[in-house]
Image (tube, rainbow, N blue to C red; front, side, top):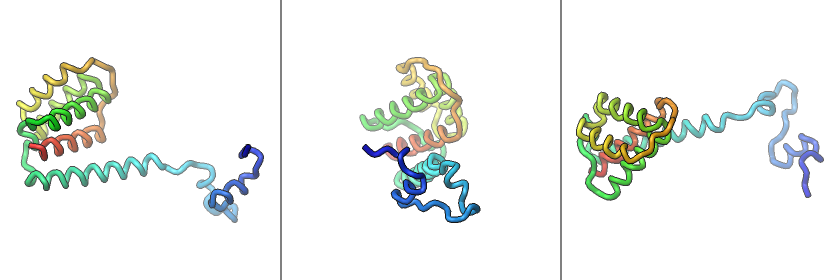
Length: 152
């Protein structure tokens, strides 16, 4: 059985193809601090979401406010609505999801009638504790809005 503790760290780095620094001042942080893999991955996901929103906007004939004047009348649309609300409730709880929907109406992402329809759907979800919804959560909601608008 291979036990990494039996090997010199320089040997392990060499085995993985990662050469150790040759000089004391060359990249010392690389070996003592982890790379920000999650930060870079999150940035890539955000960029892809924004790109998707623009593509969906173009597919739906451009964007005018409110982006979502009505909910799509299809099984796929209903499933997407439920996925979106499940996401909002999962992150922030039912009350914060309700507050987010009011915000989305205020910024004209959706109409008051769509907000009312979504609030009726929210009643089916259990009340849970969640955290405060932040910018990234709202960005994800905008992607849901764009997808729903493209289905109409």
